[in-house]
Image (cartoon, rainbow over all chains, first blue to last red; front, side):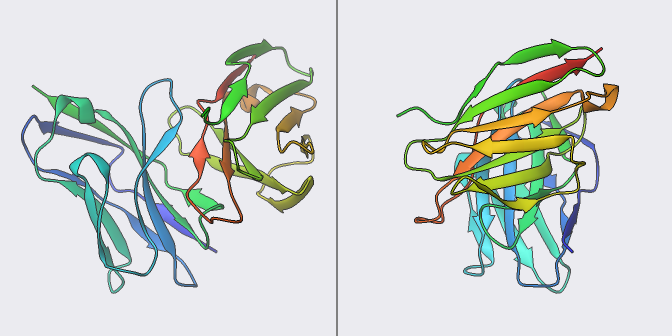
Length: 112
Length: 113
């Protein structure tokens, strides 16, 4: 069975500061890993994905994530937070692109 | 090119009623997945339809059923509604041919009173 945990249901950062959102996964097979973002009253948008290629994955809007098998982690980072980054972020794991298991989410607030 | 479209956007029902939610996939996509997102939680996988058949199912009771039509659009039906069924229902589409990412619609917000 696959599962995802996200440490911290709410994270606040100052504008311009580093963003770090934590994700740990459990999977019995090599996983596909994803980060999605959800803005209020909208569906989910894919930020980036890991599919067993490079362990450091770059996504949209300046986000990146590093796959660490030994730590079963896939943390999301961005060097400098913008106000527009305030949203809900979901880490997800799957055995393919089209069936994914989502974590509980982390709400990111950006303080001016 | 329209993305994934869902209707209606909002719906209010009472306990015991039945509801039907609709989804049109992104052009060129043949697979539709449904997710339930309760307030403050991540989306939970309900089921997936491909070639008009249910291909995978999550841990949801039989009150949740679906259908896929020849044009790949899909419906989610929920019978005997419970208060706990109140949630945002998300539809996502994908293509088996290209194996690309899931595309999500904006969802249907269901409130059960």
